[in-house]
Amino acid sequence: MHIHMSISEQSGESVSKNRKTYIAGLSFSLIGLVMMSIREVHFATILKLIPMPVLVFYLFILSLLIFNLFAYFKKSGLLHKIRKQWIWVVGVNITTALMWVCYGYALKFIEPAIAVGIGYSIRPLSTLIIGVWIIKNYKVTTFELYCALGVGLAILVQGWVTYKGYSGVGEINASDAVFGLIMVFIAGIMTTD
Image (cartoon, rainbow, N blue to C red):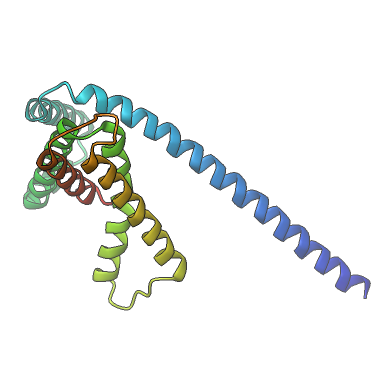
C-alpha cells in the first residue's frame, strides 16, 4: 500500500510539474510572439517607405555576394551541389522575391500591424492545408480544427476591419483594401513554415 501511494504521489507531482512546464513554455512562446510582432510592425512601417522592387533587388545582390564569399572561403563544395540542382535554387529565389514584393504592396495599402497579423495567421492554416493535401492518411485533430477555425476567424475580422476602414490607416478605397489583403495572403502562403 505504501509503495502504491508513493507511485501515485509521484505521478501527481509529475502531472503538476508537467502542467507548470507547459504553462511556462506557453508563456515564453507568447512573450516571444508579441516581441516578434512588435519588431515586425516596426520594420514593416520602415519598409513601407522603400520601393519594394528596389529593396528586393538590393537584398538579393547582397545575399548573393555573402553566399559566394562564404562558399569561396569555406571550400565545402556547396556551389557544386547548387549547380546540380539550380532549378530548385532559382525557384526558391523567385518565390522569395515574389513574397517580398507582395508583402511590400500589401504594406502600401493596409496597416502594417494587420499585414503582419494576417501574414503570421495564414502560415499555420496553409501549413495544415498543405499537410493534409500532401500526407494522404493525415487526420486533423479536434484541437487543430478549433485552432484553424479561431485563426480563420481572426483573419476574417482583420480583413473586415481593413475593408471597412476601421484600421489605423483609416478610410481607404475598397479596391485598394482588397488588393492589399490579397497581396498579404499570397505573401503569407509563400512563407508557409
